[in-house]
Image (cartoon, rainbow, N blue to C red):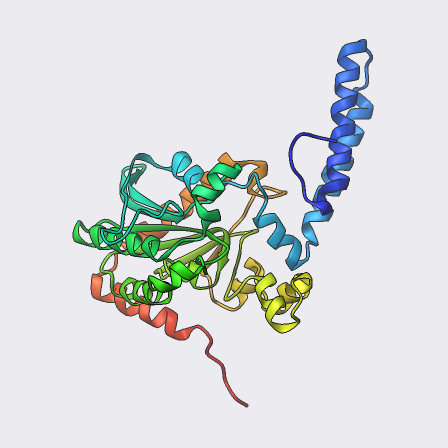
Length: 320
């Protein structure tokens, strides 16, 4: 049909796009005037696109967050920063390529950028472990967080992971301890922290670098204590029940802004970030800079008090 990958619910759009493309090629090749017919189909395509993306289910939004063409952490670093210098290793065991980080500038603002990185092709996916960090990845992140604190440089975190790696080796090297240690230490860091969930935000794998003063997420990202497939496997012993699990978990940006788990939702181009990565990156950059500007006006002790209060308030409820 077309070269670019697409999701099943996008099939009607892809078929219409292909038809428009074929008509344009035919019009040029045969020197036939088809502008009216093409314009009519393009209007139909715009209406159809708006209709489809305005009524996505939670599971469809999860699928969109996993689109193979969606921008990853390194893509955003290239598009919104300059002078990026990647730092490696946890100084204990190894360098985890699923977790990347280093110092950079966003305009004139020096920052430390940390995030999970997935791969594009099979070789990259294996090298990056599909964006699932080992304990040494979280320990590397903490080492860099401490460096940023030492030099009084704010931290920007980009989250995109299906979860921390659950393998035996990772557990033997203290996966749970590494994540818990990061959560505690991030709560104490004496520099501003801005977190943006750019794709998947699953479980402790996300939270291990996800404690921040401001937590934002892209419109079609998701964030939850567990993946829909994992939840379905536990509750129904059937991963095929993932769509039902996604509905129950309330994983979408619309859900999480209402629950006050995230502070802001960053809009994406119609159809998702992969439709216009550059525009998406500029929106992310704008929101990061705005958040940092506000956070840097706060005294350090106020910053820490507000951060602690923010997380203590999540999950509050009243009994009647």
